Amino acid sequence: MRNPKAKIVSARTLTDQTTLHLVFLFFFLSQLASGLKSPYSPTINITLNCGFIGRTSSRDNRMWLGDINSNFGPFEHQSNPSVNSTADKQPIEVDLIPYYTARLSYSEFTYIFSVTPGQLFIRLYFLPFSYKNFDRYKAFFSVKAGSYTLLSNFSAALTADALGLEGFSREFCVNIAEHARFLNITFTPSPGNPDAYAFVNGIELVSMPPNLYYTPENSTADEILLRRVQFIGKATPYRVEKSHALETVYRINVGGRFISSTDDTGMYRSWSGDDVAYLTSSETGVEPVNMTVHLDFDAIPKYTAPEDVYTTARTMGTNETINKSYNLTWEFSVDAGFNYLVRLHFCEFQLEITKEKDRVFYIFIADRIAENQADVISWSGGNGIPIYRDYAVLMLSKENEKKLNLSVALQANPDRWNTRYADAILNGLEIFKISDSIDNLAGPNPDRPVPTPTIVAIPLPIQPRKLKINHTKIIGIVVGLFSGIVVLCVLGFFIFQRGRRVEDAKSSRTNLPSDLCRCFSLSEIKAATNNFDKLFIIGVGGFGDVYKGYIDGGETWVLDKGLMSSRPRLRCSPSSATSILSL
Ligand SMILES: *[C@@H]1O[C@H](CO)[C@@H](O)[C@H](O)[C@H]1NC(C)=O
Ligand SMILES: *[C@@H]1O[C@H](CO)[C@@H](O)[C@H](O)[C@H]1NC(C)=O
Ligand SMILES: *[C@@H]1O[C@H](CO)[C@@H](O)[C@H](O)[C@H]1NC(C)=O
Ligand SMILES: *[C@@H]1O[C@H](CO)[C@@H](O)[C@H](O)[C@H]1NC(C)=O
Ligand SMILES: *[C@@H]1O[C@H](CO)[C@@H](O)[C@H](O)[C@H]1NC(C)=O
Ligand SMILES: *[C@@H]1O[C@H](CO)[C@@H](O)[C@H](O)[C@H]1NC(C)=O
Ligand SMILES: *[C@@H]1O[C@H](CO)[C@@H](O)[C@H](O)[C@H]1NC(C)=O
Ligand SMILES: *[C@@H]1O[C@H](CO)[C@@H](O)[C@H](O)[C@H]1NC(C)=O
Ligand SMILES: *[C@@H]1O[C@H](CO)[C@@H](O)[C@H](O)[C@H]1NC(C)=O
Ligand SMILES: *[C@@H]1O[C@H](CO)[C@@H](O)[C@H](O)[C@H]1NC(C)=O
View (cartoon, rainbow, N blue to C red):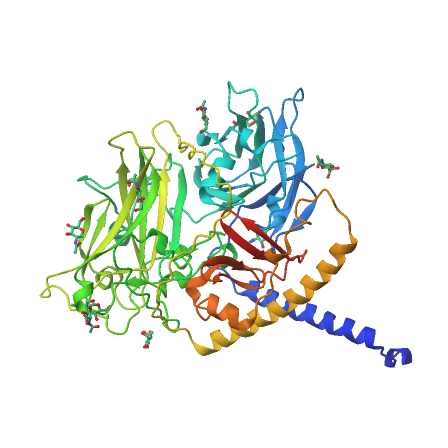
């Protein structure tokens, strides 16, 4: 059946058709991407958008269910019920879903999730803005999951201030016992403080494979070496028992880029990109990368970490004088008084390292020897085979400090008889805080920072990099970024024009000084990002990589190409010593 009228195609429908084709192309590509099966498929996979009604999808295409009228709660005393509210302004650094809306209360409220026995991640999302009648600095509350205290007298505002972030999430791991069918997550305002209220923006529950981080009860012969958790400074190994709860404090793709939760192995963990901020040694080494290596997951399950973690690394460098003169050292600030689980991920992918004794080095954790014969090939069985090692360390303060630095240091083996190359390697790192004897994981709040009257751009040092990026990738990034900028400028113009017509005196962001909004030329962006050096990637938006860039001699800008957002928007605003350009 052909409709003759269909032949008359106006210019208008032509553009509509093009748009339609593009939409189908994106749909097809996203289906293709999600069709690549993750190594792990969670049985529990709950995303709850607190203070919201109905379903909506976040920028990464995950569907979130509003808590209003949901089966999960909140359950509370009817005398002083909680309220739902949107933040007093829209966040620009984090996604609107689930951050923009919140559930807030001056009294206790509980969500009840039906669960199955096994281990799961609990992720809590906080946007500590002010909400209608709720001052951001007055929120102090505890969060309990089952018998575990995850947070206590917690101030999300002080935490965000210390991190220099608008919003953030905290990740915990708990074990659901054999007989348990429900998990209660309870938010309680700090007692003895009449102004204190509790709030939460989002809750996520995702199950994980058995014994991913917990110590197996009965190890098979193969597992005994792999799953041994060496207790630093103690004779007997540590056991991460099912009675423990964990909090993820660091998860880093060493030498590599940020890996978003949707690019994880199915557990929605996100991996920070390598950040020289944690490196405290005089030298930072080099970052070898091998995108073509075929990884064999012979020694560990494929879901352990994304492949990207194992195809990038940090090593000591090629200069003989230099790589013998220092320890490659990272320092991580942690709460005092807890045991920590430190998981180091390794994979030898360089051509030269194929046999045992090719690269043997020392590992120090918290300034104590952890390995004096670290030999990745002997642990894993060969080049291209990922492996990890676990360590536990008790961090006790000597002079009542709230925070301590947990250091991880790699030293090249000075004894050339023992090793072919005097060098060391690390591909990834995870650090977990382990609950104490009273099932507590909570630490103190950071101190309230002294308010600074003016916004100062803090230039971060630009390190010269030796990196191999393949050309198709560069072209891809250039084309992607360039088209992003064009759309950004067009959109900016459009929104600017529209913004002139729409009068909205209430919004705090409509009267931005115009010099905070800027379009950049491609050459400016290339210069600012050291020619799209992947070290400048700080995250991934819906449309590609997010770069930080140094403009006008040191001012930091964030360049986000998140065009897939359901609400494309152009905003620029100063934020915590950083100027942000977000689309
Ligand atoms: C988990 O749930 C989200 C939201 O409902 C959904 O988008 C996603 O596909 C689910 N993932 C898996 C692996 O089932
Ligand atoms: C709470 O949610 C309901 C339902 O979506 C909405 O009508 C109401 O305006 C919200 N309250 C606030 C304070 O945002
Ligand atoms: C969960 O919370 C509900 C409501 O507060 C309570 O009735 C129930 O006993 C709790 N269950 C557990 C296992 O704590
Ligand atoms: C571990 O081994 C012991 C003794 O061999 C057995 O009684 C127990 O059921 C095993 N536990 C698991 C979880 O397999
Ligand atoms: C990457 O690994 C593959 C396979 O082991 C090897 O053939 C290739 O030469 C390696 N590339 C680099 C740059 O080391
Ligand atoms: C190694 O580093 C030292 C000290 O910086 C320098 O003097 C030497 O020239 C370097 N050697 C090479 C081969 O680059
Ligand atoms: C590396 O660190 C260890 C332990 O702190 C120390 O004994 C060693 O001297 C350091 N090596 C270098 C080259 O600084
Ligand atoms: C931790 O390390 C940082 C950076 O090296 C340093 O500024 C800080 O004082 C250290 N903190 C402690 C408690 O040692
Ligand atoms: C320094 O490291 C490089 C590899 O990164 C290695 O080729 C070289 O042999 C090392 N130096 C010494 C003295 O072995
Ligand atoms: C809660 O934290 C705030 C800020 O860190 C502190 O001033 C207050 O004393 C704490 N309250 C309790 C009960 O610990």
